[in-house]
Length: 189
Image (tube, rainbow, N blue to C red; front, side, top):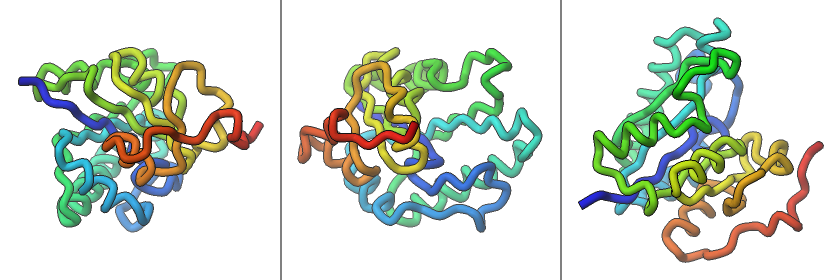
């Protein structure tokens, strides 16, 4: 039987968005991340991250991999298992098949891990995360951490807007059915 999943953006969703992370010492988890992910134990958890800094030469693939491995290890130590990390190393102008909002990585997870995308969620702080959810029939949850407030006016497809990863877990678990109404958002221009 296919399982539901939660596909999580990394920077700005699970950890502070500090630009192009070169070292694990730069990783700063949001305080609510560990508890939120432990609460999602009935879902298969994935990280899907665009890391255009690799293509732009700001970081190398080994640095990105080390940061991803560290994030996964810290989450495991806190009681949450990440099934896989899907990392796009391209920049938007490359026209690759894997950069969000492309559904490439979610289709890989669907195939390789028997995921039911229609019962799944995508959580992130960029409109492309919600667009990705919409493209595969999943539910998109837009967090206002990271770049969330800055880009919220760019949301073009339906999604639930919440304050942070903790509130996203509430929505996923059905304990908080409504996010922040878009009409009450203060969006940076």
